[in-house]
Image 1 (cartoon, helix red, strand yellow):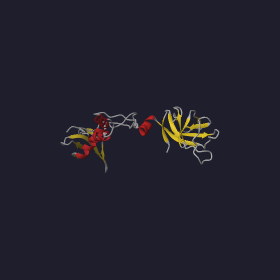
Image 2 (tube, rainbow, N blue to C red):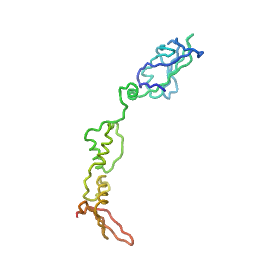
Image 3 (cartoon, helix red, strand yellow):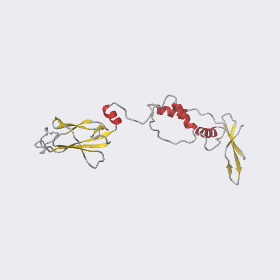
Image 4 (cartoon, helix red, strand yellow):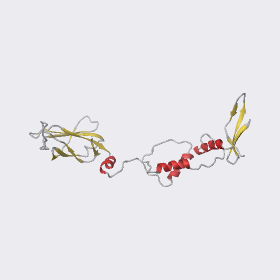
Amino acid sequence: MAQLLRQGTSVAVHVGPALTTGGLAVQTAITTTGTAKRIIKHLATAAVTVTGAITHISVGHYRMTLGTGHTGTLGHLTLAITATAGTNKSLPMWQRYVVVPTNVFDSLVSGGDKLQADAVTVATGQQDAIGARVWATATRALTDKAGFSLVSGQHDSIGARTWQTTIAQVTGAPVTASGTAALKLGFVYVAARNKRITTATGDKIHNSVSVGIAKAPITAGTGTFTRGKYVSVTG
């Protein structure tokens, strides 16, 4: 598994084991001089030479430092080392890394942060405000807001306030097609629940106390009846 590195940060990395050119023994005597150290950044078409010391730690594993420029590109990073000097030669060795944003590294590795959810907390009372806006706005479009977030439990709070908010009984028909969602749903509910009187000339919808609130004209034709739009009435 590739090791994670924080983007744009100088870091000491380990690589190994180094083996002698015969491949049967651990090489513990690699020196900085005569050692080729290169990195290949994510999607790069050429390698970059890395300067600086390389130090043996134990059983063929070595330590060296990558600078901020080496870790400046997000994505895969390969470190390749070959010792070619004198009797301290080695077979090529390499280590693969993944350079990640600071927030991701500090969340998953160092434990000093939390993964960013691009969100902000909804303060007390704002859940009700969101619910009110849902029903008071005639036309809505789903958009993403940078930095918007909900803390634990607030999803349910907003849902509860949206669907459990009491909507006052409508007192008439929606005046235009662009009326609010609350008015439109309320009118459909009243029409389905309450008394309704239909005659040859009209269809009248009543409220919960049997008072007429909306009426639509009906025109009789040959074998058909045509109902017009509902308009508000009183009584």
